[in-house]
Image (cartoon, rainbow, N blue to C red; front, top):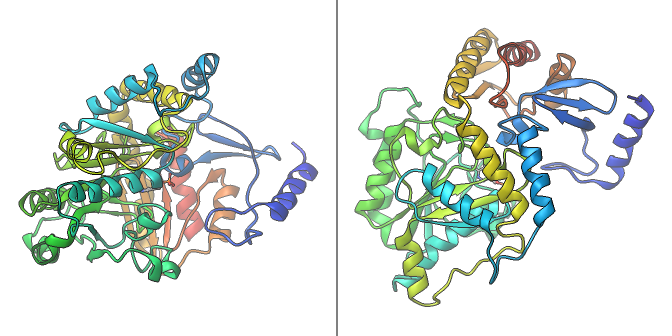
Length: 427
Ligand SMILES: *Cc1c(COP(=O)(O)O)cnc(C)c1O
């Protein structure tokens, strides 16, 4: 509760730390969090903020949840970690069974890893190895849509948006991939078959060199916060089937209810061949991720040279992470999450709609428990952050986007406080 201690921390942070996507020291001083509970962050000087970010999509049940705390502390008594090479454990088996039961039907095998980027790396490796094992090594490129985001490691950077993907500096070093324009028809827009023309043409002309199509289903997150039409996804699924391409769905941001369906693929009723999960998998408690695949892929890779998937993170299937992931999924299943998302969606729509009238605003978009205001020019992050923090809300705008994806347990009054903070901060 003491301002000296707070300022001392910020100063020492500036001396030794590097923050995400930032210079060092970070030019806009960070806010120092002492603890978090429910929907609230408590700063070291005693200020309390409603978390409108769910710590980047992850904290769906809120912080310091008694059920999640109990799952992790109970697991600590058994084992915090054990290697997964040559060993297995009950929670890994249970969690894999659970994930296969709740994800779109047809997936059959789970590879656990330690972060979302790694889950995408593994998905890409699976796709390339699959065609290699089938004696078609020329099929090694990926087709994706612009304005995507799939992570920060080298293979994932190659499928991020080549312009706004935050990685253009590395472009010479990245695997050259094939890009189609981003879908234009919004989630609830009127479908037009021409929407898929360019992608279809790329598939028709280049399928011999393509291993897979990779995309974020329905919601393009960090690449622009865009929501596209489910029919697009159905057309992509059909093209993959027709032209022998695998479909990789990156649901690291959308998984576990965020869009109003348990998985965004459910909006289109499709099953990808490979599915990446992360972020909310542990309810935001630990870094953990999973790559799920159909068994025809694991069978081909396992039966023909090199006969194994060439990947194995040290902390693969970490028991603490499995324990808290199982508890988090249990909490979700036993909660009225669908009704909560519908309610949050309505509040976000009502609360953000007035922003449309502001002079600098280009668009307002809401889907499920995701709401955002897109501005015409880049947002002054420092100023907007200061203004929302002064109104008791935590948000982290980027580029032209001021967005919120609050925990599912956020109360109506708190959602209203978030949306009015956004409107006031942008006006
Ligand atoms: C966050 C994110 C990733 C990367 O996950 P990390 O855990 O940060 O490595 C990949 N894809 C999507 C869609 C994401 O939102």
